[in-house]
Image: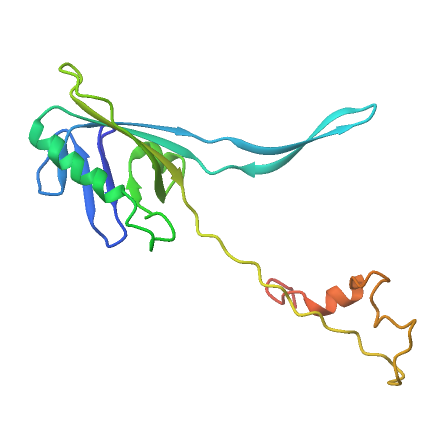
Amino acid sequence: MERDQIVFVGPAGKRIAVRPRARGQNEIEGVVQVSVRRTLKEESTEIPKKGVEYTYLGYDYAEVTVEIRVWKESEFNKLQKLIQLFRPKGKEQKAPDVYQPVHPTLRRHGITHLYIFGIEEPPYDPVKGWTATLQMREWRPSYKKVKAEATQVGRQGGGQRTDGDTGGADRDGTPIPQQRALANPPSAKGVRP
């Protein structure tokens, strides 16, 4: 794949390509410039008499800038249709549409899904033609954490509970390590016989 073309695969599997020599109805004749910005997430804490300590938190989601440039008016009309696809669909849309881009720079950074959060379209320039700049962010599915149900460690006596008995929990009601271990037993996967 050439560096000056990009392919977007939309939510319904619709494929849109921008390339120097367009061949089909869903292809725009133009060139593309893609840049990626990925930053480190870290937290800094000032420690008295020691200075600042940094904690590594991983990498933030990448921000991608896709600049599309076309020179023919017919291709500009196709570019406008592409931009309309990225517009919000109304109040009923809860989240932005996610697109799967295909481009060598994005592949090198491991970016497989993007959503658009900004579009910039400067006026027509007779030398540069029509330009549209898409500001995109990396998208990854988020998973909700499921709370494990707290289980009480069984008591030996089986009698009535007294005021001082916390069921094995600390005074503030947080489970002790033994309770947490019983609530979340270790996985048997990868255990040697």
